[in-house]
Structure formats: structure tokens, C-alpha cells
Length: 131
Image (cartoon, rainbow, N blue to C red):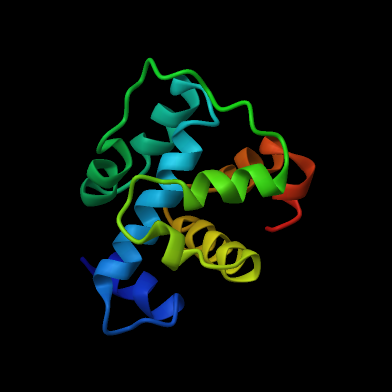
């Protein structure tokens, strides 16, 4: 998809769209575990079909929400993702923050009015400072 290719370029890996998909899946997975299902469904409703599929892939709507409150806990969740190579794709804090912000900024074209930024701001003070 054009979005995945564009995201790969933004992430600095233009020849590796699989990397972009892995990063996107990790960010989506953490968002799903941190916001209520109704809010998740509002986000999903605004995404193109391929991104909807990536967002809901592996989603257990009944899974309890994460209780993580700090940026360190947020980054730990990203690295602990079941996605292959998550610990490498988000190898250090600065790289992880940069990739999360890149994904959020790229998705802003679909989720208007900074809704994703608002969601991140509600996660924790530290997480909100990333964007």
C-alpha cells in the first residue's frame, strides 16, 4: 500500500516495508491495550481498509486495559510486543520514541484533528511529551 511505503520512507527504511508494518503493528497493539474499545473503534472507523485490518489483527476486545502509567512502561510494552523483532525495531528509548511519533504523525492524515495525539496525551504525561 502507498501508506506503508510512505511510512517506510519516514522511518528511514525505504527498502523495507515489512519493518514499517512491524512498527505499525506494535504501535497499534499498545494503543489498543491502553484505550477503551469504543475509542479504538472510533479510530479504526477512520482508517483505510488495510490499516483497519492491521489495527484489529490479534485484538482481543475483552483483554483488560494496560495499567502502565509511565513512559518507561509504555516503551516496555512496545518492546514486549509479540511482533517479531519488536525488541530490535525499538532497540533504545530514543529510537522507540522517534518511531512512535513517526507513526502517529503518519496516521494523522486519516485520524483528523490530532485525535491520536489526544489519545497519547491521555496515556501519561511522559507519553504525551513525545508528540
